[in-house]
Amino acid sequence: MKKASGALRFALLILLLVAVSALALFWRLPENASSFVLWQLRAPRLLVGVLAGSQLALVGAAYQTLFRNPLAEASTLGTTAGAALGALLSLTLDLRGVGAFAATSVFSFAGATIASLFLLHVAASARARLEEVLLAGVAITLATSAVAQTVQALTDPDRLFSATMWSLGQLPQVGFERVSAGLVPVLAATALLLRRRRALGAMLLGEQWARSVGVPTRRVRLEVLLASCLGVSVIVALCGPIAFVGLIVPHLARPLVRGQAQALLPVSALLGASFLTLSDLCARHLLPARELPVGALTAAFGAPLLLWIIAHRPRTLG
Amino acid sequence: MTPIARLSGASLGSRVTDMDLAVSPQSCVVFVGKNGAGKSTVLQLLAGLLAPTRGSAELSGRPIGELGERQRAGLAAWLPQRPQVEGTLTAREVVGLARFRFDEGMEASSRVAEAHLAHVGARHLTDQRLDSMSGGEAQRVLLAALRAQEAPLLLVDEPANHLDPLAQVHTYQALGELWHNEGATLCLVTHDLRLCQLLGPAERVLVVGVAAGRITWQLPLSAPELPLELEHLYGVPFAPSESPGGLGIAVDRLEPARP
Image 1 (tube, rainbow over the protein chains, first blue to last red):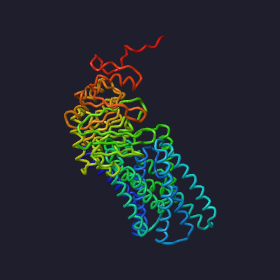
Image 2 (cartoon, rainbow over the protein chains, first blue to last red):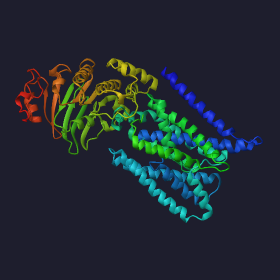
Image 3 (cartoon, rainbow over the protein chains, first blue to last red):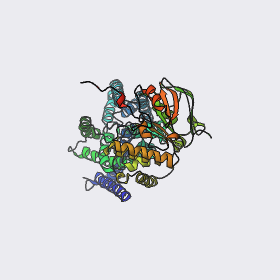
């Protein structure tokens, strides 16, 4: 019965994603629209949304388990900020085309990794105090934002506009070429994270217990952090920093995975894809003839949730 | 016979100093001593969770540092004093996760977990969350997890802490079954030697006194001089082993508080 209910859950989540995708493709599609609008504009954007949503949610679920903290996600622990600073630096270099995207991704990954190594250092030296990890994440975010603003201030006004738009976080209007360039690293990061879901489950009972049953916790921690940096940095390079998806979605997913903690990661990934696609749909159609950055929308959902979690402190991390 | 676990001149900061210890297969060793004496640290050294700064720690004749994580988990299982029970893990998941070292699917782990839970009389808890259980229920689940790891050496840290008397008795009986009937080697940290009499034949239970990170004496649980050594160790009198309530605190020899 248990197995059947698990399969049913995945089937329903996939159905939800298909429905949301159909909406994203065909909602308010003009009668006389060419196939160009559908296949060259809407389809790649949908694909970016699915990739970004699932990756950010997956990283959020992994971070919350790894740091045993319901507030952990890429944007609260400084990974997103590090990636964004790296990406911003590359945007000021005036590169173009797919080469530019590759450069942005590499810069972004470097930024995310440096931020995460700082975080890991704090986590290792203050193992008992998980709050300190979050404070370190806040400190990293503040420091990198200060540098990012300085960079923006020094950038010439033409490029400043696009950099500012990018830094709000939105699903870009890009072709399949660029999306598929990001596909490989994102899928690799996803596979790495999903492969470690059992080890992460064991770490919920404490790092020492996990080690005692044979989990190589140090390697798992490093692998999860690096895979997360890889995934997040490619998404940041594509879409800019989209906050709170990784915070919200795992909390929505938890009621669905009661009694099967190891399903949290795949369920979060599926739900995240639908969540971001739906958010983007709202961002596109909420105001007539204007488009909101989807990052602003997810922040509008996420910030109150963050406050609610701080006030209620749920101890449900599984 | 090769000891199943051995410390040779092992030191760790100021917590454990120059400790020599050899645990032979299928024996039962009980560590006693004041809080902070280093008892739990000894278990963590044997579990490979801490590494000695000087000297060596071995499992089955091999230095623990040379063993892979899974290999080590196949030799020694550890039940911590206060496990962090976070999140929504169910009994089935916890026991299944204790089988991490086995190369088996989650389905298989889950089936084995059911059997182990049934064995410790916790079938009804299988799909309950650990954080919703009473202390005694959770301890039963963790004992099932300890069994499920299928390691020959069991390192158990104050297993009856915070439990009600019946759960304490159940816990020690279950540990005794693992040691005396199923052939496991048991290393136990406790303050309660009365309960240790439930483990099995007292003359085969070795009690090790630990003070300030050093082993000060080793005596069988049946030794008549044990209460006196405990008195030296803890600074309170203990009832003689053969008396009723033997090896408990001799309350009749203490002054009650005056109003």
